[in-house]
Length: 99
Image (cartoon, rainbow, N blue to C red):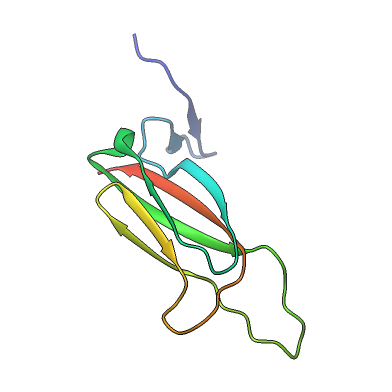
């Protein structure tokens, strides 16, 4: 017996199923201004990982603001300021999907 959720369109065709491959939240963390962070997610081995950045505070109109760079290698997510620039505090959302 299968378990899950299936949502059907008005014409009877399948619109969504929990058997579909979707992006799932793996982690969310805050990175301080000008800080570097490296997190490894061994439980996501064999999955595709992406990250999204969100600024914590909006800068004043007269100020330029920089988010840090995010690089992903295997199951490790690295966050670091851009070369030669200071970075602002940001929230990093890490998502994973079955490959």
